[in-house]
Length: 181
Image 1 (tube, one colour):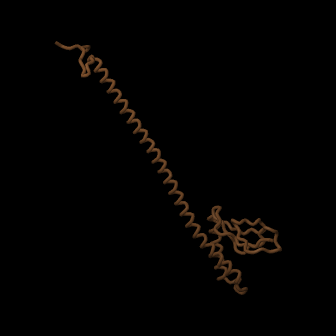
Image 2 (tube, rainbow, N blue to C red):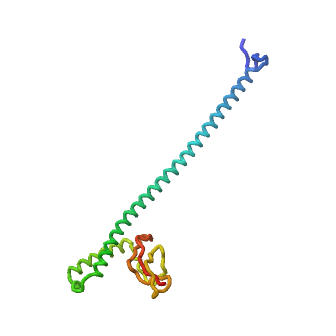
Image 3 (cartoon, rainbow, N blue to C red):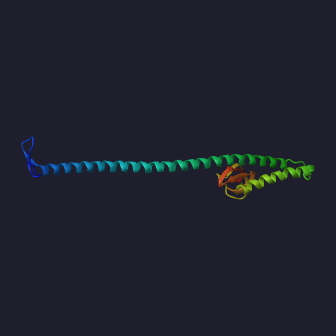
């Protein structure tokens, strides 16, 4: 004789359950397990998404730091070359100041000082600016006060001893100046 779905079965503890109840309990258990698995997978997905966001942020930071480092390296290399060219200009200026009068109009002298002019024009073209203004307020970032004199206006540059230079808004070398007392 076939059992019908509503037949009762005896359990170990002496209570009776129907087959339908067993199937219902089994389905509920399966659903609970599936819900737990879904929760677990959602948590794993959230963790993976958070990790992806962190990794993307890390990659952006690495790119930014690399670019900043590269820019700094390029600026510093350029700065060093410009400073060397400025030192060469200083030597031309000293040579001009100590040039004997009989050589002032000599063709060789004119040729040498045309090289000075080329270097100076190159620096200007590249964005190097001179710091050589007289009568301005002393700026400790742009000027190095090496002496004072009573003849000048107090706190103002009265004489430039050595020109200073600025590149891209940054001082390559401060001007050495005399300041009024």
